[in-house]
Image (cartoon, rainbow, N blue to C red; front, side, top):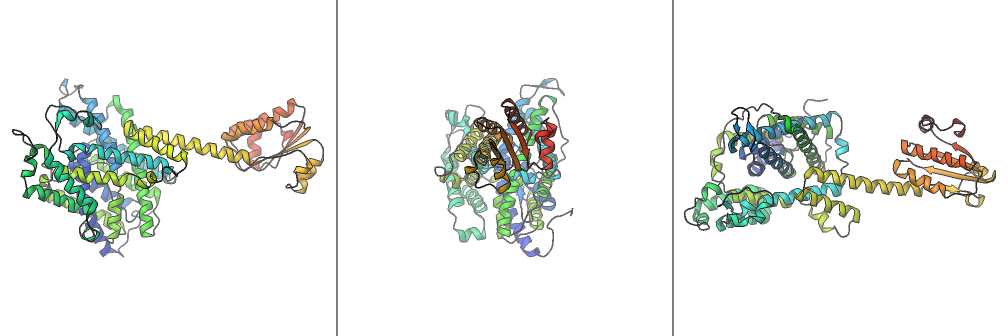
Length: 555
């Protein structure tokens, strides 16, 4: 295995251009994702830098640019909230006192970043176990419902920023609580105006301008400059005596290199930590490999799924160790990179270096960015994640797929992300199993008279001529889903003295199907009918012998 996959120096100029462009585009997303996660803007920047650099070098997709993405940020936000909530009201063992809010915040974030490390380790394991090909088998309705739900959650989470909510009574806002507790908040019409300007820019910026400066960056600059030149916009939407800028601006961002965080485990929630880490790993794998497929299409290359998982895992594990958000392959940033000329890991690594330079030397200039601008940019992210194409065709798509999509979407938004994926996979598997069962049962050939045997070869026709014989042929791989149907179908056959059970077209069977064949043998014995099982290959023959079918039946 090569240390650095896809690394070469035949496209240096394009990679430099692509890396610089992707780095600039990544800046507003990294800051916005950090804020949305609850871990802070600097966590988003560190996550973009670390995952972007190491996933590029050690991954399996040449042009891929990695960093915090909408789906990963939503999961991280839930993880951060869950673990901070756990510590609130608990006794701090170091002081013997109840955790203060700041102490609970610190302890919860430490656990959350440890969960990111676990997620990275799981992804490395996925790659080493060569599970990449299985993740690509995720049914589209499940992926569509989940991603659409993530998009809806992202949009909902931006309501406070876009509407300029600031607290005037005091309560904690969850994903939906702001919709029911609006009376506790004051809506800043100035922030709404800036958010509206930002939305107009990100959605309607002419393509000619977008080729020169990407719309998210243009929107970030436009919104920030609007406030800079017209500061009265915010104050016009605020009642007297309130200091809006304390709540409406990004504020100071720490500068410098990140500190190393020793992984922290809490025995009472270790199962929750493992579950959250697994969720981050699976979602990050799906997110990254889907982006890898997009990259393949536009670059006419072929990524290596398992190598990509290892690279993403290394990036995420290191990001968690240094207080960064989890990341994955970012479709928009990857496409921006490719369109600007980037094709190799050099561009992805350079994008991370550009962000690092900003953190080390320019973070202080970002404190004047209005939260309304970042919220509006994330609204665009949310709408881009929603699978509008599938929603548009929902009425004309197969009803089973549409039902799966709607259920997964609903569970994602209203209940739990992991449960949504689990329910979707179970539903898709059961529907697929039913379809395969129908195909397997339809493939059964059942012949009792020579008049019905014209489609059989001469040898099988001779068996029918031998007397009152039932020729019963199974076709294709038999699974547990069809076992009961086979026995039920065979039970309807009557008036035979001899049964020829032909398995020549059955390459494999499972245990349940073998038990079904055993039950067919028992039915024949009860009716005093002779049964011969013919055509079984060595593998199927051994399977039947091992469950105790009489060798005299096997020919």
